[in-house]
Image (tube, helix red, strand yellow):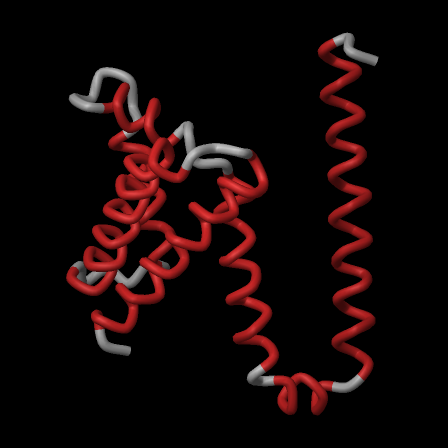
Length: 148
């Protein structure tokens, strides 16, 4: 995929996240815009880095590494990054990303149908196992903290 198409997807996702930020959390899009621009810059830098570096890691690894580095206390500008990005709510970011994932799965629906019922069973077992493991971990941590 050409970089211009990828950049367009990033920008559309950013705009949708700003809209979600406004309607879901009542945060003025102008107030959240600097944080969204920072996030978009991190994503673009991570994407370009994943294409340029000979070590083939998932793009999200590069994006996460850059985000961690620019938000470490003591790194020049980290306080600004944290302050501005704090105005963008995670759920506002997750909504367009999950919608895009749903659309990409839907285009391969015929392939999904060929997998049969075993995929559904495996997915249900995975969801159930993840839920139970999360509940057990939460229970243990809350008990250790004395919250419950």
